[in-house]
Image (cartoon, rainbow, N blue to C red; front, top):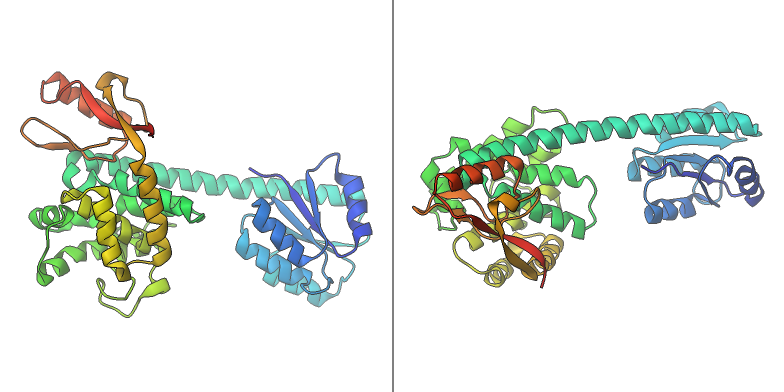
Length: 380
């Protein structure tokens, strides 16, 4: 967690004075104006606190703090200004959502006390956010693990979806990646209400009639409705709802949404799910990529390009045989694991969690599978 503070003022002498009085206690950066401050925010990541003057050439303090609120919502915002009229204070509070409003000249100890309070506020904000996100992530992962073990044909693929969505999100340098991962993990939950044979045929890459595809696609709306009532899951629910929507506006649901108006999480899922269906039907990775390229109007171009890059990186991974007793957390299966009578136990791409390892050991002890499995290792 960053504890850096950014002071913004168009007067170098003011910034030098602040640096001299506070540098022994705090980690400081300074910027001579709003435009420079936003560049530093973009380049250096989130600051714990931004303290800005009001009257500056080009971008004033309210404009800066308002933009900082959008780009770094967890950053605590303060204003230190000699322009202490009532309207300035009102605008700063209403638009910049500031934590403190300080008047120049401000004594060093008063400013230090405000910074200490701001750091405590930042710790509270980030701790609450991390707790909520970790709790949601843990709950979603536990649910997905149970579903993947009870019905690996449908749900065993969701870990693979999550990993691929995360890789694309990282390649695109997206924030709140946990939301995209969660959408992937829960993307198939609506399939519990769809005929099992229909789900198996679709996820296996078989072509469906228009009426069958419409019936299958209903799972996305069912899943979204199940998820949307959970706090902070609204964006995840919409990603699930639009996972069968094509970038050109065709697909499901049958509405006018298309292009960049489709939730970004859904655009990620669309590429990942279609690629997976091609692979499941027997296509090699390169062939599956080619098939995506042949119907490129269905996909967000930036997402498709990033996805192709991540898959080529995966194609460079070597595989290795590991004894079941030597499996550890986060190892990834390089191929489907089936019993001698062709029952799928764990799907390719699934991580070897504690519950999965126990599941495998139980089947091995009963003589239903061998002692080793194939996992991904290091790049070739």
